[in-house]
Image 1 (cartoon, rainbow, N blue to C red):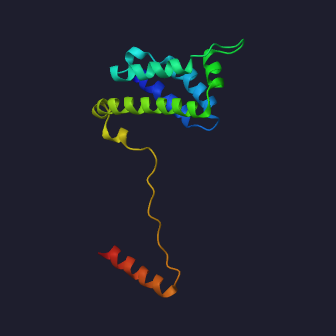
Image 2: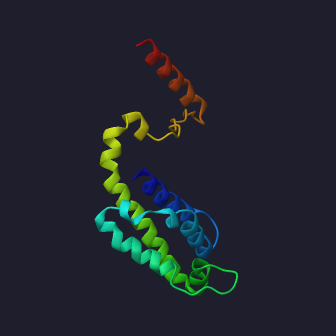
Image 3: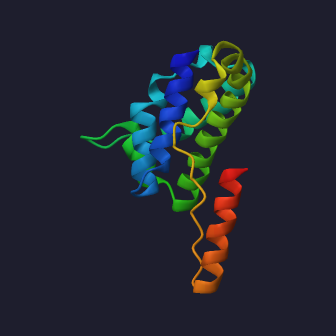
Length: 144
């Protein structure tokens, strides 16, 4: 299941990158969605995944291209947007199903973001008479 999870995550990340939606969609399919074993998906996601797969490979390729490139070439911008949205929704649905098992298997520290937390900046007054009062307050607090 982790392979399926990783492939759908990779497809969603491919779609989040810069570039034309058609290029990102073709990349997501070739590098990730094509490797998904539909039998590893939960039953509720199999039909939408097959429909997405079929929608991305429906056109007959010209010489030197594959079915995905031919299909993506013929998609309108809104059709490409819809297919990209379907891929992201599939990933989201799998993530929701996969989250309870991940939470039970992984320690709490693994669920915490690896980004450092932002700290509150030190406030420095622009007025000299206020800053001396703030300094005294800070001194008073450090003694307590």
